[in-house]
Length: 319
Length: 303
Image (cartoon, rainbow over all chains, first blue to last red; front, side):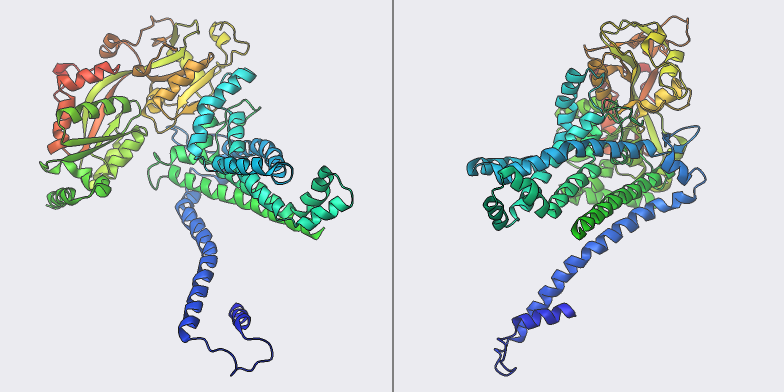
């Protein structure tokens, strides 16, 4: 209700006029405005509805297995033994898959964040106008490449490069998945990060110039602190893509259930596991429900990442 | 007679259906002698190449009939058949009794099996690996849970020009009929050792083995390339090893030979019936042979 009053007062006449002097609006235009407002509010609130609905339906598919005699929640979370179709001893341990997801994401972040932020700073602050136009178009094009194409690059090109450079026996591994995910998230980090830097008012740059700051000092002392929220958002969207990515990691990581001991070990991620196994799991079977529970687990992981980032942003703001 | 009515309805639907509805409506596409029909085939990755070759050739023989083939694994194909979503499920293993039950409960029809060929499950190593034969016990030690063999040197094999001779195990995803067949006949129904590279298709296994000097993997013998070598298998250590050849597959001397099946819901009718008859004819079986599999001997073709 409060918002509607605000909208009305904004359209009211100049201060000091009485109600009778105000130009009268037709009932039709008032009704249209109300309808548009309701529609906009509904689209805003629908986000909450969709999140809750998705969580509800995923959890509803998963829930019955929690009471299954073969299923133990501690085993699900902390065992590395993933034998969903065993003939003799079915075990649903997802620890190796969770570690797989986290490790691929960590490698991707370690590569993508410095590279992406560096590129964003270069595009926004250091490069000439013509190069900037070219770079922006190319980067946006990079962001539009479908994930299956990246997976293909990982499987064929990157795996050979890795074998040639490191002497690893198999080229599809943690490093490969991390590099491919980094390549996928860098364009997002660059384009959103560049927007955040562009949003810093030019008066900041002029003030820094007036104080005799070098270009690098301006970037480091003035622009990065001023744009930190936007830059963090850029990093988070990049990370989000890395955690949730399925097709590319399915093809590039080697799909082996094990806790990696090094960058050259193959891993399997939670997302890739669901993609590979859901098709064959009979609907309603414990295996099928455990895969949905894996979805719930992924949901919580992304929720934790977003919450942590939110707290970090608040912490930075307060300081 | 609910069964026949539902079939009639489906046949009528198939005539009206637009291509967008093809998957639903034409799942029973063989119902009538319609001018054009679409047959949906899904399942085994081992059989997907040969199924595709049959579909293409059949298009030349009977242009009015479209055969749509997709893979995904025997389990995926059988699951689709249980829902009545496909006309034929390809499977490189036999249907489990529970799966037959499920299909009967969902559709009211008993699945019918057709053996359309034989395949030897070959054990592949890289072309540069000096090993030529291996026993099933040694394979179980390499692939099975609790197995102790992790290096080629433990088998007395020295790989030239390799510093780390850790065996790279190449396996299949768990929906694959090949995976289940290997588990049953090599591991004795015990589980696989975790940490193998689980590939999504028969061809991927052979490709990875071809590019990895320390790898060992299993796949249908039709997928052999010049980069890999098929090992002779000894049923027991010390027994003579048998090569995966046509004769050894038919005589069952080769320990990992298996039959390739097609399943339909109930006795096939119309276009589906003709298609399966054609596959089991000399023409169809010749295509199977050209793709590296072993055809069904003429004497065994009638079920």
